[in-house]
Length: 333
Image (cartoon, rainbow, N blue to C red):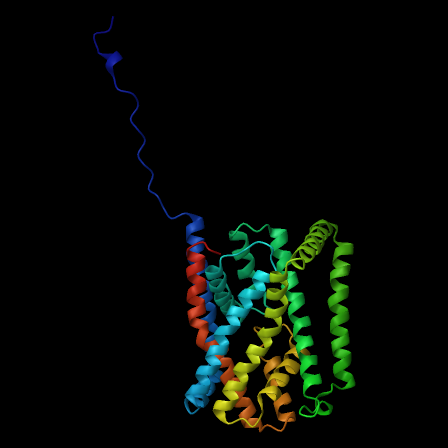
């Protein structure tokens, strides 16, 4: 029998607590929250001349008209949130939805073809329990209804103001029509070929189409959703054009409100499909050309477009980037 009190020895010593380090997910979230600000800073450095020119022009403009343009800019975010709600059957919280669209504006002006805005909205919908298929179908419906509604509003202006608007100077030539026809053909052919050739894409695409058709029937059976979807899509380009008209009035642009609205609708409809960030570049050039065709001076037309971009992009860009970073940090996106 052993004399040592072996039976009373304590058990094994507890292992030391590991030193906790920030998880990869947390670190990735912090990095992602800073990405919008870094992209905005890089873009501002590249396009600093446009910002300085627009700020110099706006410094001598009528401040009351500029406040009017800022008011229409804010209404544009409300209209975007209304259209997003109209494209989804489930009810979304109004406040966070509006904040997501304000943040989506910053992302939309960094990535081309509205990819940034759609990505922000997709994450927002998924965070609120919307299945991926339904959220994607909602984005597709949103993207389809907006150009149709804009074209209908353009036709209304053509019919309402036949003598005021000079359509002959704005008619596209044969080369432009060929480019448009080629772009439409490619846009329809490439997806069809991908679905035919790449078999793994067939099932998700077919599921998306079935979900979209089901949601379209469901949404159009609800008058409130129809009004939000189509009414918001129709008023959104008019609000954007009203920003341009307000900036033009502050600078003394000799065009009436219907002319400016028509100029924006015609320009954005003609080249709005070009994949540029926020439509910047092609839409600006087409807008200046259209206003000059309506007898506006070239320098005032250019200054008006620059001022419009300052009000709708550069002024809300930094706050939008901060809101986007805050939403990512709080895992709302």
